[in-house]
Length: 301
Image (cartoon, rainbow, N blue to C red; front, side, top):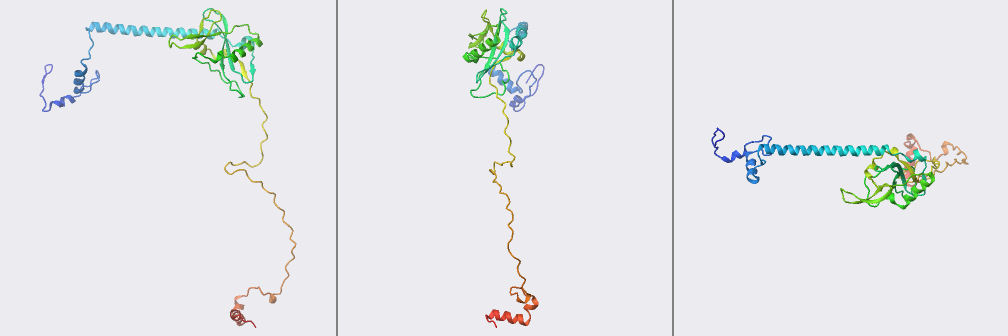
């Protein structure tokens, strides 16, 4: 067996050569057998072309990856700048028209913000609505959660929501237009959705940018009646009821002891007492033995 200026003897069993360790970190093969098997099945793994051609191809791939990274960075910076500009041009409605909330029986919960179009700078009103459960009284309006994505049917376009927004604008005399909701088609997903558009130039107001408006730029303009605080009933002063034992029985008042009407037992002389227990000496005396014998025999004097 020869190599580059080297020679070695072939072992008695040549198959052991396939178990030689050739791992060097340059390929996935760890043994010579794996390398030969992959070479026979897949062929060589070297790139085509001269070294200078390969180097030029690698350089082009690196330049293309760097160009894509720069484009992605500029795109992110443009989005962040537009979000910051939208927050700068937005304000809470209560800052312009005062704090006012339209209370309904079980109507929607509506938050609104004042902003302007990114294309023509036209002012408009945007809103976010949530459905209130019928018959349920709310103790608070909850936290604002603006959806990042919407579908073709969004709750902001419900007639009850428009009614609440129009009533708020009428009561506050807000001299601003509502944004229009129109169907649009997404370029990336090719799906239809309902979006806010400018009432003046029909420019799209992206829902992603609407969801990035800070919370302090929103105001609650409509909410159902809040739950009224009621006086708590007085707590019972009796013993606590254990659900495992059931309701405790009512305790009866103690009965006063009745006065005794019995007279004291008269004192009987000792010689006349017939139920008195006799002592040991009396039982073993001649008279006691004779009396016991008569009782045993059933005879008496």
